[in-house]
Length: 249
Image (cartoon, rainbow, N blue to C red; front, side, top):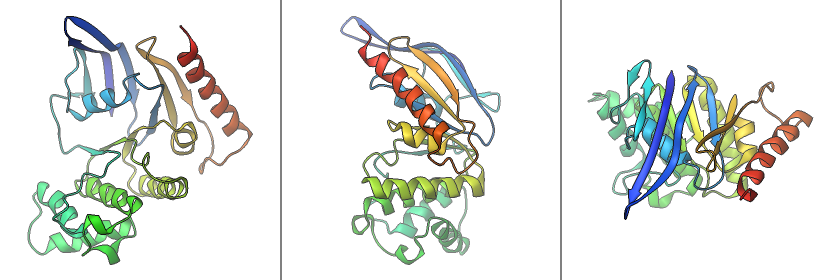
C-alpha cells in the first residue's frame, strides 16, 4: 500500500542544515497496522506529513499503490492530537462536511453521518457542538470524520496524546474495533511504547542519531495484544533502543 523510497528531509535555516532523516525506506502492507516510535526530534510527525502530502521530501519519494504522492488526497485520512473540528458545526455537521468532500449530497448525508456516529458510539451527541464534548469524544468525532471520507489509509499523529490514561485506553480499544471492521491501512505516530505494541502488527523505531529507521520489530502476538510475557519483552526491547538513542553522545 505504502512505499517509502530513499527518503531524505533537510531543513535549512540561517545557512545551517538540519537533517531529519536520510535514505529512509520501508513498506506498509495493505490492511497493516504500523506504529512509528522514537525519541523527540527523530522525524515521526515530519514523515507522517510527507506521506499525507502536507510536506515535500528533500529527496526520495513516497508511493501509494505505486502512485507518487505529490500532495494531499482523499485516499489518506489524517487525525491529529488536537481534533480538527469546526466549532460552529455540530457533530453531525462536521461529519457531513467530510461526506460532501466525497460528492455525497441530499438526504443521504444525514443517514450516512448517523452510520459513522454509530461506529464511534456518538449518535446521541449528533446535535452537540465540539465545545460541549470531552476530549475523548472529540477524538471519536475526528475518527468518524476521517472514516467518512473512506480513505484507504489512516494517518494518526498522537491522536490520544492529550487524553487521560483511562480515556486513552478506551480509545485504543475503539480504534482496534474500527480497524477490525474496516481494515484500513493505519500508520500511527505515538510516544507510548505500550500503545504501539497493543495496537500494531509492526513497530518502526526511528533514530535521530542515525537519521532513519533504527529497527523494525514484528509484534507477532495473537490479537488482542494483551500484556503477556512476550508483550513485556517487546516493551523492554523498544525502551532499551530508545533509551540508548537518547543517552548516546
